[in-house]
Image (cartoon, rainbow, N blue to C red; front, side, top):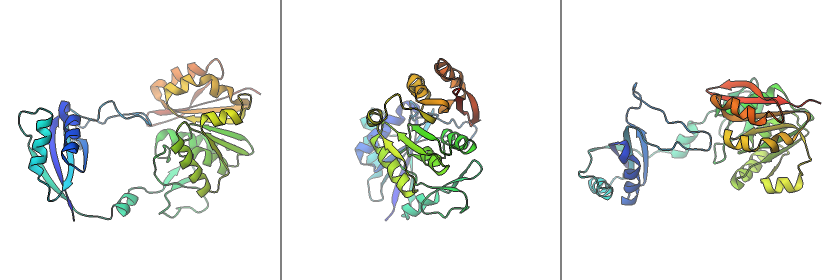
Length: 303
């Protein structure tokens, strides 16, 4: 059994509303693409980690609806168009989608990721390219952080360059737990990961167990109750977003031990100065490295 894709080109103003109406009319799934994709007129949409763009639409949008082969495709499009008040049913084309092994196809899209000098992030269905490297077995999932995003990569490279051997590490906003696991495998004496998302904490605990890392993961409330504000860490890393990072400046800087280091990412290059300014009363941060428009800020408290 296969499926049919109904491909409709519409103006920006109708893309999202038509998508919703197609779902209500019986489409199995709907996506919106740039109709100019692959041409000089293509316009990428940007969003920060964990945040979608304000609008998933382009000046010339392509709405692609998936339907059963035996569905009444003309009636589906007509019903959706009428629902949003279009005066005429838009033109559309049909594309057949053959049945495939979707699990195998999805897995083929995720290859091992090489980071820094000696770190590999390897999905469970792949063999590690270098058995002597620092290997993290990590499958793509719901929690942010697989090493593919520049901000995660920057933090991992900093940890590799400043191996926290026999040092305590706090990973605030841990997501999948990947930074905490890097710190653990690099010889940290103790590692704690904190995240506001219970699902992220569950994912991080699973990943740590799979990678044989002894890491404590907790929600902020539990972390605060078991680790009072007076407890300091040799390394504090936070890969979040610029706005929450600025708000958390007193708290995060206050968790850094004398002689300890603070590393921040999730910061665009144009946001670096304002984030550093928020931390200036507590610690001096400078741009440690930049990658694809994102930066990692780092600083060290005096002894």
